[in-house]
Image (cartoon, rainbow, N blue to C red; front, side):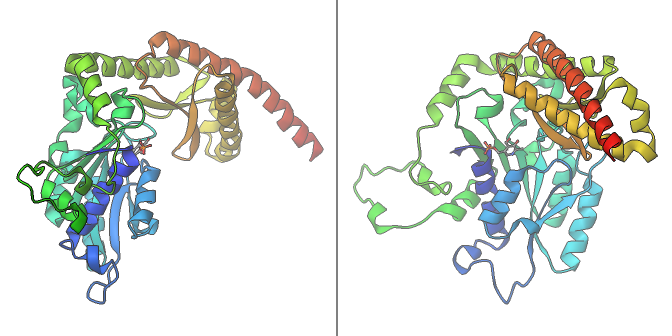
Length: 369
Ligand SMILES: Cc1ncc(COP(=O)(O)O)c(C=O)c1O
């Protein structure tokens, strides 16, 4: 089903997961019931959860506190053994787990959760597995990345956003369901004014019964045209170009002594930080780290904001393990390694002059105190 974007795709998936957990009974009776006192609960990776999951949890009435954060490994991928333990403990404590969200191309570092292992855990516990691949699901067409996607075919639902990595103009999200009956059971309705009896009545899929929208725009045309225009091979080239840019940026960061690697590159989102050469040793020292990091966080935020304001590059920040990081999401069909070089040099230039100003400020605050 095509949607406005990833948030609404996630909404359709999580709402269906919730309804299917109660055999669709809660559609009419609502979530509260004396026979079912436990809290409906869902799970996602602690570091890489996307804010749309919180919004959807609030929209479907379970509340954002229903989301449990599952510990990650050092590559910021969900730890399936920790998920398994959490599900067991939560059921013992009376909770009602209804969905595990696995990220396929996460928001900060485009990492892919271990899908096959998560699918095993979900199968063992009888819990719906949703793969949120808004950013990265379409990378499954790249043979060299295929290993990352093993197990995605076992998900009960998958979100992917053609308006992200398929370069389709806004807005065009998409959600796929393994069991189309679950989707229609969650969303179909009856209304007398929609009954038709004539012989030529429409017998195809009623798109208004596949999700929350009844009136819907014709999103399929631009998607169909883009698929026809590029074809699988065309998209492979495009996706590879984006991944190459992220890898090129990583190489630049590795080679620089005034930038710091925070995470290896995965797909097309890459996060790192500016770290003046003379602060490296201080950051490595546990006693000084916190104080220096406050300054480095400020520096990275300012560098990114200033570059964005020039209009040269649209760069944002995020947090990686509590550090403010510069985040580049490289999914434009126009971005080349030369643009990455220009952006990197601009970040460095902003870094040098903001750092010089910042040191003066820190020195004068120090003198005042
Ligand atoms: C992992 C993930 N899920 C969901 C979304 C929400 O998508 P949209 O902004 O199209 O609603 C995003 C957007 O960045 C995302 O990265």
